[in-house]
Image (cartoon, rainbow over all chains, first blue to last red; front, top):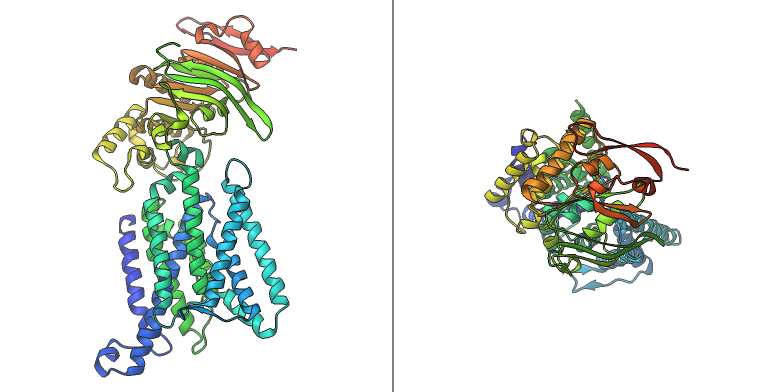
Length: 326
Length: 264
C-alpha cells in the first residue's frame, strides 16, 4: 500500500486542481468554455478561479514543505512555520501599513500591504536569528525555538496595541487580514509565490538525506559528515523568506504547515525524499479543497479559508490517529 | 617525534559555561589499537571523545590524525575516517536497520543519486558482521536494547571508516548482550584492523578487549598505560575513590574487578 501512496497522492492532487475551478457559486461545465463561449464564464474561469486554485495549491504545498523542514530541523513534531514569529512579524508589517494609512504599490503589481507584510516577516527573521545567535558557540535549536516563540509573543502584543488604538474600519481590516485568504485576480500572485515554492521544494528534496539524519539527532548527523551549522542556517533562512513571501500574499493560514507533514508521514513513512513529494502533492490539494469548500458552503458569502483548514484538518488528523491505533 | 604516530592529542582543554571540563589532556595512539577511556561519572570521558571527534569544537589544544590537524578537515572528510556509536539510549530513530545503515553511507554519497551497488554490498557485509542481517527490515525503535546496539554498530561499520568511536556502548544492556557487543567490537578491531576508542565507566568492559587504558578523573588525565597494568596496587582506588577487589578465575585471561567498600 505504501508503494502506491505517492502515485495516489499525485493523481489526487492533479484531480483536485483540474476539477476545483469548475466548482463554485456557479458551476461551470467544460462545454461552457468552448461551445457557447459565454464571455462572462470564460472570464470567471481564467481571471478568477484558475489563478485562485493555483495560488491555493502553491500556498498549501509551500506551507506543508516549510512545516516538514522545520519539524526535522527542530526535531519537534509541534514545530510549524507560524510558530517562529515570521507570521506575526508579517502581521505586524500589515497592521502598521493599515494603521498609517499610506497606500502604495510596486509597479502596480505588488500591493503595499503585501510589501509591508513581507518587510515585517524579514524583520522578525533577522531579529530571531540575531537573538538566537547572541550566545557564543552558535545557535542551538532550543535557543532558536525559544527566541522565535518570544518574538512571536512580542509582535503579537505590538499588533494588539496597534489594533486597540485604531478605528473600527482599520481594526476590521487588520482582523480580516489575520484570518488569511486565497484571493487572486489574474496571475500576479501566482507568479509571485511560485518561485518561492520552487525554492523550498528544491531545498527539501535535495537536503532530504541530511534531514533524515537530523531527525535522529544532531550528534548522529554531525558524525555522518553533515555540516550542521551551515545546514541549519540554510534551512532557517530559506523557510523564513519563503513563508514571508507566502504570508505577505495570502495572510497567515494555519494548520497546513503543522499537521500536513504528519498526515504525509502516515502515508509514506519517514524518508524525507518521499515526504517532500508527498507534502507537495497533499499540502496543495488539501488547501484547494478547503478553499473550494470555503467558496461554496455559505455562498455567496465566503468563509475565511484558515477557519476551514483548521476545522477539517484537525478532524481528519484525529481520525487518522484513532485509525492507526487499531 | 616517533614516526608511527596515528592519532595525536596535544594539550586538549575544554571550558563549558565557565567550568573547566577537561584540562590539558595529551596522548597518542598507534594505528589499529583499542583504547578504553575510563573514569567515574562526570569525569569528562564523553566530552573528551566528542572533542577528539569534533562533535565539540570550541576546545583548545590540537588533535591530529597522521599529522593532519582534524580542524583542517571538512565534516565529510572526517566522517570518512571516524564512525560513531553514540549513547542514544531511548532516542527515537524512526528508520529500519537497513535504512539507517544506508543513511550512514552519507559521507560517501553524491548530492543526488540513490543507493549504488557498492553501497549495497558494503551494507550487506556490515549487517552480516554485526549479525543483524536477519532483522535488517525491522524498525530500530522496535528492537530490544541489545539488537539495537548491534544495529547501530552495523551502521557505523557501513560508514567505511578506519576508526570507531563508542560512547558507553553497553550501558543499557543485559549481560549476554554486553558480552556479544564487546566481542563484536573486539572482532572489528582484531580482524578489520579498525582503531577503536571506547568510553566506559565499567572497568571490566574496558579490560575485556582494550590494549590500552586512559583514565580520566575530574577532567584530568589520571593514568595511561597497558590494560594489563591497570590492576596494580592502589591505581583504581585512586581513580574511582572507592575500594576494589580483583578476581582471577581459571580460563579467564583478565582479572575481574569488583568494588569493595568505600575508601574514606
